Image (tube, rainbow, N blue to C red; front, side, top):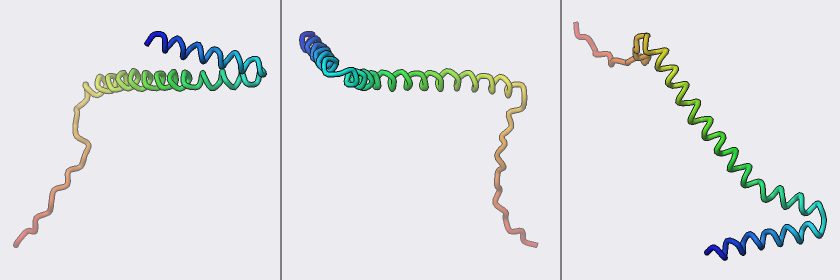
Amino acid sequence: MKEEILQFFNDIWNLASSKHDQSVYNTVCLVVLLTLPLVVLFTSLLVCCHCCCFTNTKTEKKKKKNGSQNNEDLWISVKPLRPQLH
C-alpha cells in the first residue's frame, strides 16, 4: 500500500516535471488545477466553523438577553368559534 502511494506521488511529480519542460503556461495550469481541491476544502472548513461558532454564541447571547424578560409565546392561537344558540 505504501509503495502504491509513493508511486502515485512520483507519477504526479513526473507529470509536473514533463509539463514544466513543455512550457510555463502548462505548469501554471497544472498548479491551479492541483490547488483547487485544497481551496474548496479550506473554504468549506472556514464556512462550517464560522457557522457553528457564531451561531452558538448568538443563541447564547439571545438566551441571556431574553432570560430576564418574560418568555411569552408570540403566536396567536386561533380558537374555533362555536355557534351560540339564543
